[in-house]
Amino acid sequence: MDKPSRLRPASWLVAAGRPTAPGEPLNTPLVPASNFILGQERAYARDGGTPTWEALEALVGGLEDGKAVAFASGMAAVAAVFDQLPVGALVVLPDDCYQGVVGLALAGAEKKRWSVRRLALEDTEGWVRACGEADLIWLESPSNPLLTVVDLAAIGQAPRKPGAILAVDNTFATPLNQQPLAFGATVSIQSATKFIGGHSDLLGGVATTRDEALWQALRKSRELSGATPGTLEAFLAVRGARTLALRLQKAQENAQTLALRLEQHPRVARVRYPGLPSHPTHATARRVLKGFGSIISFELHGGAAEADAVCRRVRLIRHATSLGGVESTMERRAAIPGQEHLPPSLLRLSVGIEDVEDLWADLEAALQ
Ligand SMILES: *Cc1c(COP(=O)(O)O)cnc(C)c1O
Image (tube, rainbow, N blue to C red):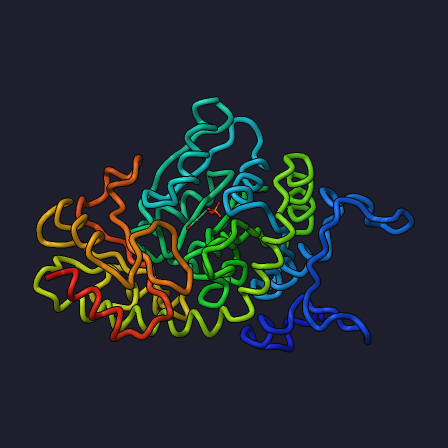
């Protein structure tokens, strides 16, 4: 099954990576193997891959319309992209960015491997200019946790320094809501831990590109760093991704409803959700995203203590970090070390696929 262009994404999610020959299992087999009988190209899993990893790569690669490399985690995929940089490179990073990526970039800067410049995500002109100067332009959209949506249509077309990489962390959008490569990005990153897996039971990552040389280099980086996906994790990621289209549709319907209701709630000071007309980058979101996603950030009147109390009082919504699972989770982001710059009462809610009335009842009770 290698003709994603004929199938729409929801069908591809179901069909991708399955065996096709008579007598083979209908489902993607879980193949725990470090090595293979010699005589064909595939000899050892760390460099040659396994059929189970390849099923995940086929699935995500088909959605992003590129060639994918699966990794042990989202951060392993991120690190493989940074691994491509020459010494002394310039990295431009968003002001609002996944903290692991910021940590990796700053650690490398401290070791003088590259230098880092930060830029506000809304500053489209700044990013267009950065494309002509930087070796790695790192974008995240919608961003974590402020949910700023980047004008990829403009930035993806900006002239770049030769050899420069435009990388987009597409974890929050998923390849269903945004296809960075179609906008001109060099590589698109997914933390498969989140929406692709969708059940909060695995760590995984995928980098996808249309650049054959970069694809080879990312595979080489995986081989040499050893950041290979777990077999069970790759199997679970494919299994979870079968329902991604349904899960995302339901979760973002729920999120839109909850965002509108939260905005009317007297204890809520501000709601950030790309689907709300009040969101600063709503107009951009309407242009570049196919859906607004299922993450909402909202602030309370009052401070950290009030927000912590809400986290303690929710029942159906679980007080937990991470996002993109079938279950709704919530946390106060400024409570996390390194995130103290965020508004103290900012709660990030990852909306799941529960009945929205039960979610609202839970939120309302917790906000009382
Ligand atoms: C979780 C996450 C990552 C890192 O992925 P891991 O699988 O946890 O390593 C990167 N970017 C974003 C936006 C994320 O949410």
